Length: 111
Length: 114
Image 1 (cartoon, each protein chain N blue to C red):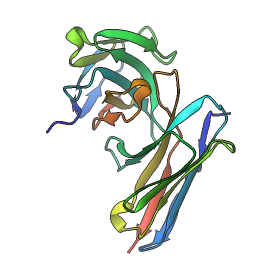
Image 2: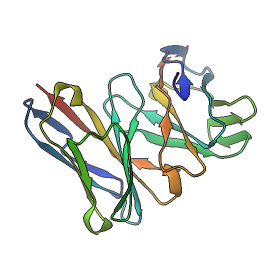
Image 3: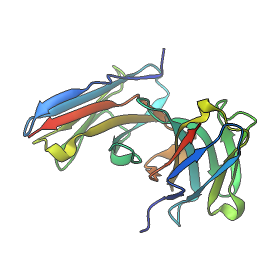
Image 4: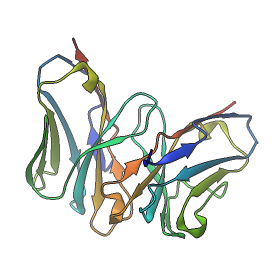
């Protein structure tokens, strides 16, 4: 079983809808949580970073962390066709030197 | 452009050949990471440098792989005697913070071994 699980999708939504993405993890040692966006054949781009349970908002993006359930989410409001990409969650442990990624969820926002 | 730069962007090589990739991190970042990503998967950690010291290597990094970061600036990743299974996107990232927190990635080098 992978340390970080993420539904591969694809997730197809109409323009303007809310996109809801999530990851689950098994190791409570993960303390820091990031979301990356990756367009086809490009490198991942950091969207959000958080280290505590609760919500963090940045523009149209909201990251949510529930450490007790080992569950993290990313919400994208007012989705645009330009949001069509693969979204990767990335976690790391307090004493670790690396990010552990989920497999990514492919999102398609239709005009 | 002050982001992470990787060269070349694409490399096609014959099985058995050696290849070398270069990464130039964001200038003030002392931490540098290499990851490998195959189609439909998330990136997998390969190795980590803090300044010029290579502090961690994944079991994925077989003895055919070697990475260096002389003088704590740019880094190179060399693959010797390439195999078809080495075909992947090789990503470099850099950060100021420990663990790769808020790591910024380059555009990657896509390797195809034929």
